[in-house]
Image (cartoon, rainbow, N blue to C red; front, top):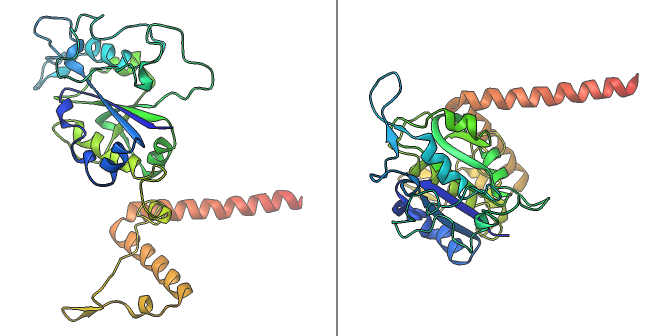
Length: 288
């Protein structure tokens, strides 16, 4: 199964961008994942192809229009029966990117019945600083599925009615920062997913021994030369004792997380404590 990514954006030329090189680019060439872009502006119904308007109640900036975004989103959803850009008056994809290419999985039954039972539906993410921070655990869930559709915000953001009318949209934030648009965040989320796809990384363990995978930051790394500017590789890493190396790495991972990311450390300790108390309760219940 190919991981299918669809990006709804005002700037389709930003893709694949960095995802067209290195591991992600090679995986794209090999068909391990696919990428399609949808030009949101193609779904505007007026002659000026307007995608935004002033905020209700006043204020600075512009807000993305819900009718235009909904039309763009509906065009890639199987079984909606709402049609493509040509049918809603957008005039087709002027950017040269077909909103819903016929060979793309999202193009199935646009004007027909819902997808067959058992067919996986791709999650829909909307990139917004008001969203829930994405985690490595959620990235793993996405990478294990059929793909993802990502709506890239711009200006002051989305009209809230879009999320009320399309509750399947998952509002996602990359970090506690504000970008000029959702495209850079979408690129990062796709990169995080693609590297986890089967056959993309050389070593399977590369995907599990990473920061955040076990709720902790990763341990520090060293390589040759053994001595550099008077600094040497820690002796334990040169000992050949795999048990001692594993213990050292675990201790370093915990120390660095505690010092650098106390928020992660608190969550890690909380999960560990809850697991222990849960095990005790289970044992007590079995003893009664």
